[in-house]
Length: 91
Image (tube, rainbow, N blue to C red; front, top):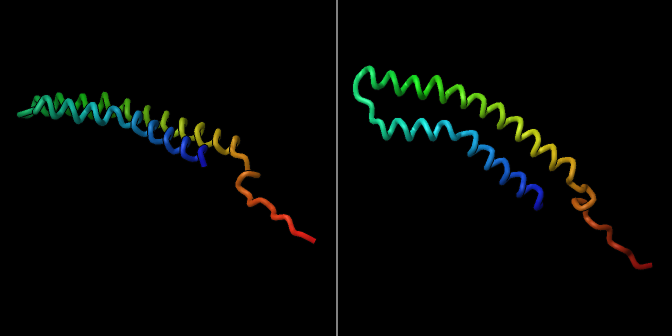
């Protein structure tokens, strides 16, 4: 049970790290408050091209991290602990 909780926590941290470029874009867009065509174009280029490309790289890293995390849990999970203990019968 502890392994699953650790695995879910690590997966959540990996997802938050993966979404960092999205949060950066939203913060820049909110702080810049672009008005007009050229400002919208500049913020769009920063957001969609630069941070979008980084977001794709983070997505690939996120999938790789999840494969490592869940593979580690699967290897280290003791299946004997999941089975119910056998009850002793009196003769």
